[in-house]
Every structure is written in structure tokens, then in C-alpha cells.
Length: 254
Image (tube, helix red, strand yellow):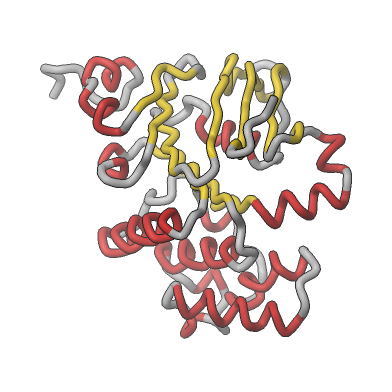
């Protein structure tokens, strides 16, 4: 029986690419409403795949995924009413911004999501102006995404998701390739969005990102299973665990 405060539940979720290459193996977890959860693990452990299962971009080979108490599978997402509601409630920011940006201008990019969800033209214009202003990129509105820096592209990718005003944000390695100033800005934005009531799931292998940010960590191992879960200070203090999941070098290694 799903709980009223439950956003996601995964039970025994497993996934293989090309039916051969294991990405997730018997993963079970729950994400509560209003949580800020860090999926922590080394590259290749399955963090991105797990986020894609939560977003309904992939479906498990075995096990189940539920969102808001409803099974998240091909049948439910083929239902136009459910799919529209789900896409308006959950936003995904990909690791590589170039994978997410495809419109001629930044303004078109930010307007794309609300347009697909059937939002009225006047409301879209207001949302785009608001989001561009909040993220400090109004001056980029008429620029083409390919003309932007990595940090600017990240801001535009986030703006394109926030324009749909989702309840839940899935962030895949959000600080990768960002300069220190943009990284600091992004951490502040995530903190502010969480304080505003958003549920956030952030996949990362950046240990410094966790300090003072996440409510809870879910640690994934290189065998594509969950190795541990707990408060950030407990996880970060478990050096044996961090070495075991390849997030910290063995002592004595150069």
C-alpha cells in the first residue's frame, strides 16, 4: 500500500542494456515527498539509469517502479492523461546539457516544455520571463544554445525544466564541468528549491556536494546494487564504505 507522502518506490528494480550489460541489479528504494536525496556512487554504477527509471524513460527488466502511488510502466505512460500529469510533475536535468538543448533560441528552449503540456501562450510568456530572470539569463534569451558556455547551458537546461513548475526534480551529475562560481550558484539554487518544497533526487559522485545539502544518501556500489543508505554525515564518515564503492582511494595510494 503506497504512503500518502511517497513520491517514488522501486521494488527489486533491475535493468540490462541490450539485455546483456547490467546497469541495475535488484534495487529497492523509496523517495518521500519533500526529500532531497543524493544518489551517490562511482561512474558506471547505475545512478543515471536509476534516474531514467524514475522518469519513465526506461522500464525495469524485473521489478517495479511506482510514482505517486501509480505503477510507472509503458501502459500508464501510454495513457495521455497520466503521461501529461506525470510530465508536468517531474522534471529531469540531464548530465550533458547538449543532450537537452535543441531549440533555435534560449527563449524557445525554455518555452518548449510548457508548450508541450498545453499551457496558454500568455502564461508561457510570463513563465519564460520569470524563469530567465530568476536564473539570471534574460540577456541570453535570443542567443542560440550552441553559442553558450557550459555554465550558461546548464542554467538554460535547468530553466527549461523549471518553466513547467515540477514538484520533483531529477538531477544527473549537476556540477560536472562547471567552474567554481557556477557550481556555487547551482548548489544555492538546489538548496532554495528544496526549501520551497520541491522533492529533489540528485545523482553525483561529488562528495563535497553532499555537505550541508542532502537529507539522505543512497550509496550505490559497482555491482549495481545499493550498498548503504543514511544521513550524509554518517555516509561521509564511513571511509571503509567509500573505499569499497570506489569513491575514495585506498589508504597509501598515491
